[in-house]
Image (cartoon, rainbow, N blue to C red; front, side, top):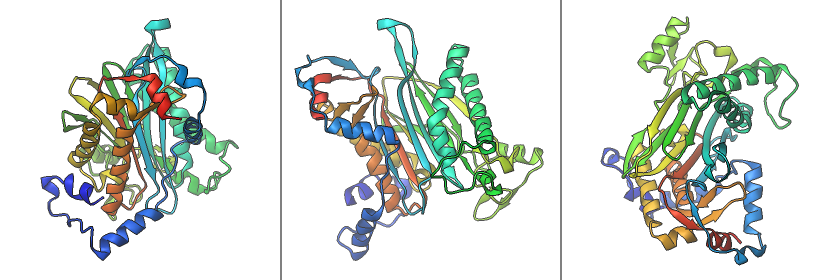
Length: 380
């Protein structure tokens, strides 16, 4: 942990206190980390992961098959409650959620999403369960008109949540009363990336963020929706609202972001309209990082990219790549390097005293090939 804290610090962060691995304060921090609970990003995926680790089928009899990483995206996920009382983040991973073509020519598009809830967890959970399905429907109906499809899917998700409150479809474990006024104050950010063989399409609503690591340099694919961002401030004021500075800029003195899904009581000042960016993939692309603001509040883009770059570089050789992957039942590949990067980033955020939930997704964008039979053997 000391090496991570000291080794990835950028020049702009030189004023941060150095790590003291032998000090009493450092030992207390390490003990505190053990109390933090890392949570599974989806129950079904966690169950599948346990099944894979206990898997004892005849996979060792399978022939060695080279699998293109375009068909089996490699990724890692870490999600931790941190110093918050409740976990309100949610993460969605759906490899090949939408396919183009037929038979052997079929190309899969891969979906990755991070949702940072506020007020309660049910909006973020609902986004995890439904937003990718809505996006798939829009893509099928409009033949991949990316910007329009993503905007419509976000609007549909927002309308579904309003109907959810009006109906009896409430999660049994939801801590808020869905028919009380407090439920109108529940919402969630959403940063979604659809990775295709030649493009990265990112849709963002709120202050979660997507950063592309390209040849060791961060390329920010989103712009945080903060109430004091000049264009957002003008939009809020033109709609009749105002921004009050109370522990930072807040819409009506309440919400610290200017766009989110949900938050019925703050409409139209808080919008569910996403900003969409379409980025062409290049041979220099290393990985994509999606994370909630629990990471970005305390870790810079440069530092996050440096951690991911270091982890992926350590697994660059072909033998290390084949031994570090396990092909999942859903088609994705849990990659050791990506998992290490996501875990290290969450731990770094906690070491820098992030007070929020922290969720990180790291997606390997390098076009490599992995050996399927060896991967299955490693997952037993």
